[in-house]
Every structure is written in structure tokens, then in C-alpha cells.
Length: 423
Image (cartoon, rainbow, N blue to C red; front, side, top):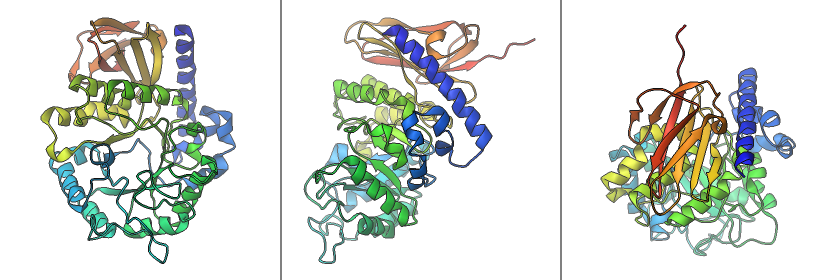
């Protein structure tokens, strides 16, 4: 297993080089479409003619923002959203890059109007969604909405968009929506590869750039076709605020690392940081894995009452910089020992490398080594190692590998920068 993972990462690095050469040669504004034939699986080449459905200029880096679902579920209203918008600004999270405000399930009336339109629940959103969008936009942020590729949404409290794709897309656009999370409940028997593309087409026809988040749960290997239609696609089921659930979702996500690109990202689901089910150390692991995997960073806690520790975890600029790196290559698991110790790595711009040393075990610190051969660094290359959680550069230079002791249920996250030798 260890040899296979190492060989896989070397191939991954070669694909990255090809990706860079293609981007430089093509010099097009939407990099995701230009590199498909060189750096992605063959079945994606056939879908390039359909990439026009999602060439909306969005998602050049993984989306960042906040969603109502993980903490509030259906207990949302106009005041909750407005005060959350205010908190994004006052905490500095908006400035850190969290710019989408996503209203998840349960925002609409139980039934459509007699004309067939969705309408906001008047008890929850008496001012209507357009007024909420205007408020969000006035703060320099963007509004996200939710629907489902079925007859009802997953809560069964509001209509889905199946059969109403055009009318709903036009409605969302008229309100000023910037983002659509599209779920997969109350299906009609047709496949996901039929239902989700319909909404992609409808969104495109509105003429408004709307980030399209496909929430298909990874049922039909969505990563293999999601980039033709969406800006991100869920690779697993709903995350829970537990250590095991978090790791399970990122493991499922890791299987599809080669399909992520600027404009389209694998999505292991939203962040649970701050909801109380894990320790702060485990939340550091949560954010670190999402960062190196170029996963969407969508906060799921109540940021109006956010703790100092949670705010520091979510707003660490060096960790966010790994996630938002413009090279746009998803890091992946490159080495695994005894079911507990893992090394994750991924290339960054400017010839740098992100490295995560993870101790999944529950007892005892462990020394973990990232060997240059595993992480795609040349054997004689000397690097400086920046610990992005400590905000410290380790003394000295490292050649051949980097070793650190890692506590149980913890990780270390480094950025390695090659040192130019003086002649």
C-alpha cells in the first residue's frame, strides 16, 4: 500500500507539471477548461464540450463562507441571517475570505404560489429574499440559496426544483442570489446525471453568475462528471460533528483528488468547527485536512457567539492561504502507516509544498516523517519549513525529509519552501 501511494503521488506531481505548462501556454481566463485533456481522466475530455454550462468565472479557488444548516437546521429566520451577516463583518471572517452567506433548507413556503413560483416563508422571512440579498450585498458579501433536484427538499418543508428548473433559476437570479446548493432528495427515479445538468443549464440561461454547488452525496461518482456542470460537488454523505465522521468524509473525498481544479472542487461537506462535538485540537485537524485538500471552507457554527479559540482556528491566514492557493491542485494522502499515521501533501505555487502529518490514533504521540520521495520534492532539495499553526519557521534547513512528533488526534501542517543555493 505504501509503495502504491508513493508511486501515485509521483504521478500526481507529473500531472501537476503538465497542468502548469498547459495553463502557461493557453493563458486563458478560465484555467479549469484549458487543462482537462492533459491533466484529467480521459472521460472528462468528452465532457469539455459541455463545460460551457459552468464557465461562469466562479470558483477559481474553493468557495468560502457560512451556511445555516449544521448549527441551525430549520430554525432560521430573517434576523438570524442579518445578524450573522453582521458577525461575519465584525469578527473579521469576511475579510479573511468567508464571503458567501448560504441560507440552507427550510427558507421557503411549504407550497408554490398558484403561478408556480417559490416564495419565502412569510413567518421566517417577512421582508422576502430580495431584501435579504440586498442587505448581504450591502456588506460586500454574497447570498446563497438552497433547493433540491427532486419534488421536495430534504426537510420536506418546501418544494424542490425538479420540473421547475427554469422558473426557479430565474427567480433566484431576480432576487440576486449568487450561489445555489442543490440537494438530492425526493427523486423521481431519473438519474443524477440527468437531473443535476438541467439546473446547470437553467442557471446559465439566467445570465447571472451563480456558483453551483452539486450536493449529490457521491452516489454516482459525481467527481467524474461534476466538473461539466458544477463549481463543486459533494463526494460523501452529510458530515456529523464527530472525529470519525470528519475523517470518513475526507477519506472519501481523497479518492477523487485528481478531478479537482480551478472552477470545480471536490466537497467533503461543510465545517463543523465550533459546534462542540470535537476538541479544539480535532477541529485544527478538520480545518487542516480541508485546507490541504482544497475543499470548500463553509463555516457551520453560530458565529454570532463564536469563541476566541474557534475564531483563531477558522481565520488563520496561513492555513487559508494553502486552501486558496492559485495553483489549485488538491493535496492528497501519500503515505499511511498502521492505520493511524498518515502523511498528506500537495504542491503549491512558487514551487512550494504543503505537508500535513496526521496522528489518527487515540493514545500516545508519534514521530511522523514526510520523506521527499513521498511528497514530490527532489532528493537533494533543501527547504525551509513553516509551521502554519505556530506561525513559526523551523530553525535550519531540511533535506531528504521532515520529522515531527504529533500528539494523538492531532496534526502538524507545514509549508516547505525551496532554498536557493548561493553560488
